[in-house]
Length: 333
Ligand code: AHG
Ligand code: MN
Ligand code: MN
Image (cartoon, rainbow, N blue to C red; front, side):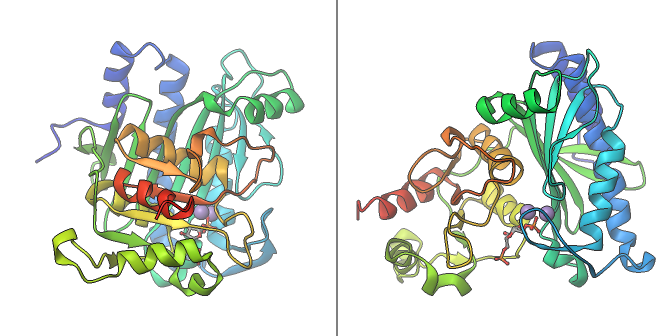
């Protein structure tokens, strides 16, 4: 075994001994997220057998056609965190509004989630994910909680994702490094495999939907032209890797180095990805691993958002590639 027998739950308990901000409430919230990861992993694997593939026939708050699994995974998330105490409110890609889950004394956090990321992959057995960001928030009602979240976003104190791939992995940070756990399905436990993940300063992978190439600005087209020059001394050309699931593509950049980006295009004037539950959680993870996330012109986590489902132009990965992308965008090259 290469896991040091460190389960996700035990890891959280060990962190709680040394990290002041790992409160009892946050520990219990994160452990519940581990439970959700196991349930979703099981249900996603069974979905073809249970008739849970394909479309519902409705659209979500940002206009995407909903898959049955989008709705099902969102329902599981809501149920798992309802009345469990620490989660005051839930913001989900699949819910129009912030949903109040608890207003008790322990309810100190808002959970922002993309329950199923990469849903175009569900019907072809390709990787998908779940993204979560946990924000410390106060408020006694819906309006106060939402205002607190939007006005003081920087209170994100933990974040991570679950990747349903060849195996299921949970990657998380609570602001003290990034840790990756692989699900042992027989044991029903996430076990530590990647300790203190460090994103390489440079990589040679590039992930973006090149089908949109002609809709991108000339700066971004020039960036692509630069990456695809044949120059072995600088390890170019970069290799293209794009699964259509942000979690899966980001995970590659996190572990092996490289860059993922989703800039504005004809259909998405402000980029496609949503700040609170897609960009910001992964930005927190990558920064904790020594990498970078940006809009192309500013640090992603410095962006001020006004709407729950606000989108943002997004570039994330190794520091050198993100810096280079920014340089192309700001006319530095
Ligand atoms: P979601 O399935 O949660 O709507 O997210 C899809 C996102 C992201 O996972 C992926 O990288 C990107 O959208 C794919 O979009 P394109 O098909 O436009 O490339
Ligand atoms: Mn998504
Ligand atoms: Mn989604």
